[in-house]
Image (cartoon, rainbow, N blue to C red):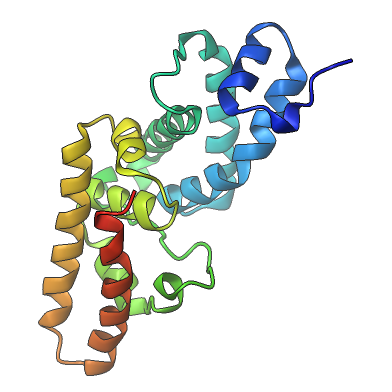
Amino acid sequence: MGKDLLILTDNELVQEIKTGNRKAFSEIVKRHQKSLLRMSLRFVKDLDMAEDVVQESFIKAFEKLNAFEGRSSFKSWLFQIAVNTAKNKLRERRRTTTDIDSVQLAVGAVAESSLVHSALSQEIQEEIDKLPTKQRTALILRVYEDLSFKEIADIMECPYDTAKANYRHALMKLKDSFEQKSDMSVADSFGGFYSEVAQYVEVE
C-alpha cells in the first residue's frame, strides 16, 4: 500500500520523488502552484507569462531536485527558482519594455480580507511600485506571501539582516512619502496600511 502523500512534508515528498515516485511531484505542484502563480504575476504582470514562469519553475525544480539539500525550506528554494525565472523572462522582454529595475510589481493581484489589502488605495500601490526592486520584493514576500525573513533571505539570496533591512527601508520610504502628501484621505489610508504592516518587521 502506497504512502499517503497528503500527510508528508515537502522534504519527505522530495525524497519520494528522488526514489521515482512521480505522484509525489504532482502533490508538490498542487501545494505550491497557486502561490507561485500569484507571486509570478506580481513580477511580470501578465497572466500568460506568469503561467509560463510557473511551468518552467517546476520543470527546473524537478531537473535540479538532486541539488536540493534541504538547507532551506523547499518552498524557499522553489520561490528562488521562480523569482530568477521571472527576472529572466523580463530581461527577454526588455527590448519592448522598461528596464527590469523599473518594472512595477503588481501588489494588488489578490484581495484578502485583511486590513493590509483593503487599505491599499491606488495611490499606495503607486508608491510601492516606485520602491527599488529589492525593497519591493522584500515587502511583497513579507506582507503578501507571509514569508519569514529567513525565507525571504533564501529567496533573494542575501543575508537575513539584509532582507530585514530591505523591508524596513521600504516601510520608511513609504511612510516618508505619505507624510509629505497633502491629501488627508490618502494619508489616512496609508496610516492604516502602515500600522498593519509594521508588525511584520519583528514577528516571524
